[in-house]
Length: 364
Image (cartoon, rainbow, N blue to C red; front, side, top):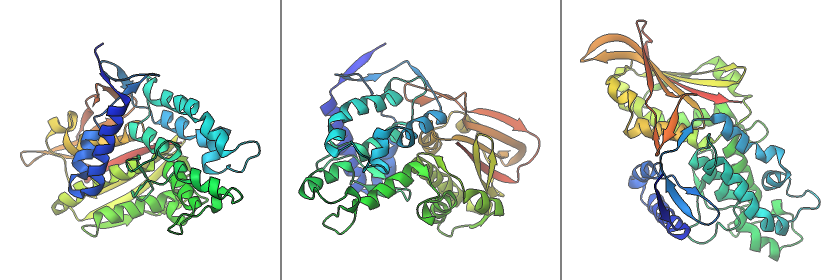
């Protein structure tokens, strides 16, 4: 296996530079994001490497195991809802964090079923006490808005206000640190105990509304409201929002094929399946569906080890109806090697779908 050494400083400087460009130049954001999706680094205790030749498996349950640490491990509970537990102080946490970050890195760098790189970055950017300076890493709330405020932001503030409970620490702009804790909690879990807008059905609906922006008519089924209201699962919500943006952009681009979209959800023993049906639309170019590039590749990278993805739709070749196809974009057989995902499985069917249906599977 070939290895090219990359110093930790060079890697951090490069990523920080790219993020500065992305945040200041909105016209470059999607292009930079697509490049960043191809960056994969594996780190041992002293040296960073870009590794090749290793096969990784798509595994949403691994993401859940990772994010669930904030419910089952007292150390991680401290960051989101138990900062007042007895016997634990901010100083204790800072001292113990290097070992804990090594524990987190196991989920990404030393696993056959790694979590998504962006999921790891989301968590680390919020809890890392060393995430300081003008180039600190960003994390994103469940509206897709970038944030720089994290636990590193209150270290000095806490020292200056030692008798003030952490949840009451206030920044110069008047905002409470508790507000950012809530935003982070609702970015890694669809919750039912915070704001109404943090519930599953609201996050999905608000995202679709934002990206469709009135271009087509969107209908939500009764099940979407009924089931979606009570969904309570760990998930990298920003990855889902990124995927929804791509899907909505496709729908708007092909609105001439159909002006109606139906959004539904169903529940089963191991999770939930969100369905977005663009009535009247259709698929073409089976080659690009099988070996994706561009936005489809970006969509798969966004949801790798986050959710399963299936696209089914009526299929046309040179304007002629050819039944329908089912494209398995991400499932239990999907692997990644050298930052490239394995080809999609495609099956032909004689029955028509009535449009293009996007299915996103969320695991419990």
